Length: 361
Ligand SMILES: O=C(CO)COP(=O)(O)O
Ligand SMILES: O=C[C@H](O)COP(=O)(O)O
Ligand SMILES: [Zn+2]
Ligand SMILES: [Zn+2]
Image (cartoon, rainbow, N blue to C red; front, side, top):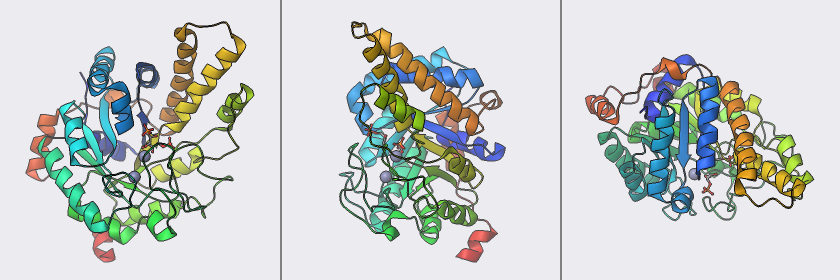
């Protein structure tokens, strides 16, 4: 079975110059959709589960589901990642259930609401890195708080995100601090804040550099050329999916997401992991609404879950191709977490700091 760590996968993506979508999972249909899409284009996979997903599906069900998916598609490397871990315990239990990667999101305190101090973030992330790396498991950290540069607001809608209003300095990752953070924590990947937020309501107009600060990515990449960058809140919220939902009885106000071209620009500047959940939620919901409106007598869940899965497969496959993942799966020979633990212990995976960093520091 081809489990892979995030680190090995993102190192490969950096070598080959592509980015990987990380899709959230809560149930079987989503898991099958992701794997069918990956199989169709020979792409490696990052599947991630939030704390909400682990509660919803139950850890045991989720762990066995991932085993089943990996067994069904033995030649597709699958990274199983904890999305937005809120503390060491969440990350440790994810590892117990076979996750090969964890996110320690220390940008917020353990309540997943209160913006944390820099010192807290460094300390808690460093602890998780020590624990996870000794198991051969990768760690993503986050510096800067996700939220809208238009309104200063976070996203309370999915239970993870600050409440209230923050100013720009908290909502944009400071490139100098990013260098220090990677040095002090040893994270494998760094999620940064530059104007994206979770959910469908990211921008009230087509975003430009004022509200989607891609220049921050370029600055950070310049200083940390070897660090894998992660874009959260990176659904594109496609117009056709908004239209389908609204055409079949939904009520989603007009909204804009992160344009795929901006993500492609990010991939040229060190972005290796792109988190996408909302687009898949919308694809499934649009398909389900359509069936239920068109066939009001239908009561077999398979009648709407099958088209929902198909709509998600189509979206996942599109993003794999757009981010350059096509054909990459068969180039990778996954190392076990035991092998990765040896590599971490040897120091060969410690962050490197190039000459650009030395100059900046
Ligand atoms: O960042 C995400 C999960 O961590 C998902 O972002 P979206 O809500 O834009 O899909
Ligand atoms: O982090 C945001 C993802 O979209 C997961 O959302 P969730 O916490 O509702 O599962
Ligand atoms: Zn966060
Ligand atoms: Zn996120």
